[in-house]
Length: 117
Length: 117
Image 1 (tube, rainbow over the protein chains, first blue to last red):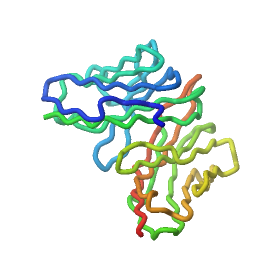
Image 2: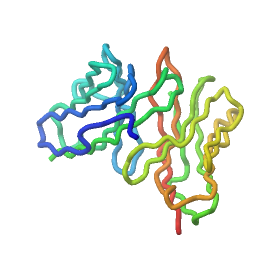
Image 3: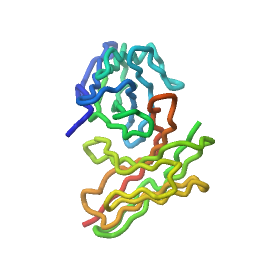
Image 4: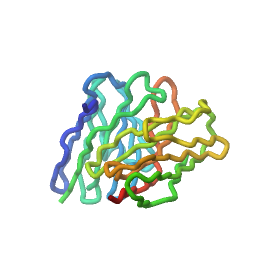
């Protein structure tokens, strides 16, 4: 069964509004979670690393004020797309490492399809 | 920075045939992990197989095996007795361990594998 739950699976919002996406590890604690973005027919691009109890680490070119990440507990990380615009429309996927992390298989959520109108 | 290259955008084989997907990577690290992930139309990321760089023995998982050539920085995936359910996007991914936890994955652009009946 799924070990990482992502919600919602799809969302449509109007330009200028904010959208929050949740990523939960269901039966294990994840001190580190990862957020990826995938455009149609393209690969996954790492956006940021979410660290429990501390600030997220963003990849180069990703606006931290645009994509707010909060990792408030060992089982939950949230990604908020602020003031969304049509170019933010994409597929967002989170992942979390099970076990000690190093080299452990990373389990992915089912993804969230965001459409900004 | 690490890069992962998948040179085959799309491949098509007949059911029950064997197919090999290629992947090369570039890194200056000596300790790292390599993965193959499968993404079917549902877009759920599914771990197929993983390889630790310090292990010379090629990883095997049922019909899936890898040919890991560390000196050549090559990590190909062989699927034996291919099945219709193997139709999906396949992504090669690279990870270096960082500190005490997992690091994010760097993905290749993917290979769309089509298994023909």
